[in-house]
Image (spheres, rainbow, N blue to C red):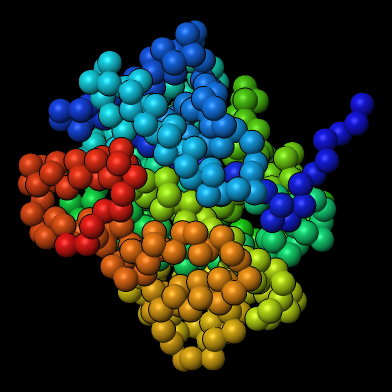
Length: 414
């Protein structure tokens, strides 16, 4: 039996978006994802195909995932399909007086009292996670992200892609941060989702590592050092043998050799799908430029250390586009000789350079301009709240976000 052909690097992409299901009137979380999927499919299920998109469950019962059903090279068309899927899902939720809420964290959810885990297919895995880590916490139950899947066909392509991805991860929250509010408080980070994800596997820290993946550039070494390490780390807790190494890996980017892809996981979900896709297209454009070695040779890219990249990821997660980057060796990886510049300035430079070789960037210029001119969604949310953390004001701001998702429009700057 012939094996399916592996996609080559940058040949096609997969994008996954996670949204909260909330009450239409109160915006409190509603744990009804299973009922919505069953109603749409006409039977109990964890996945429902609608056109070129798929709706899926997540660990928490108030979260739904939307994704392209197959990898695609036409990300503009995928953006349109995802927005249409949002509209169809909103219709499905209307019968339960519920709607979708974007952004990466619910602003007043108390996970200790409001979390319900998915109780159906794969429930034994979710329950096993809960028994080890306590999933009734923000880091498990209140963290909605975007996953970008990038293919590779062999070790050479993996080496080039993994080196480039490691360099890009630390600055992605400057574009994608959308989680500044946790339980009615402005958090110390603009991207509080990243802070909570940092902590969520604290009992078995090897699962997240330092969030930045280790400098490993071939499958055999990755399996020996990462997959074997994951199995060893979880073994004292996994007496039933329910965990798969592919799903234990909680780094900011993970290698999936079973499907030939690297999955980037450090991006918060935005106010509507076109913005998520625009950020992914910008990331792809920069990755293509890195892989082509237009700025620095591969050997130089591969030498950047985990501690340096991890520290930068934390700083950018905290300060988003305002982060001052003064790490000269890091800036040199992008062909920049300046002594320092902000993460926002760096992205303006990178997008301009990548646009010379990535025509898709022209198609998402407006969505990117909103972020580059007015700041990340997290910055705009904080500006809209303007220090008023009463639930009434939070509800007003987050209702606008819900309207943005339904209408496919960007959240305005204050």
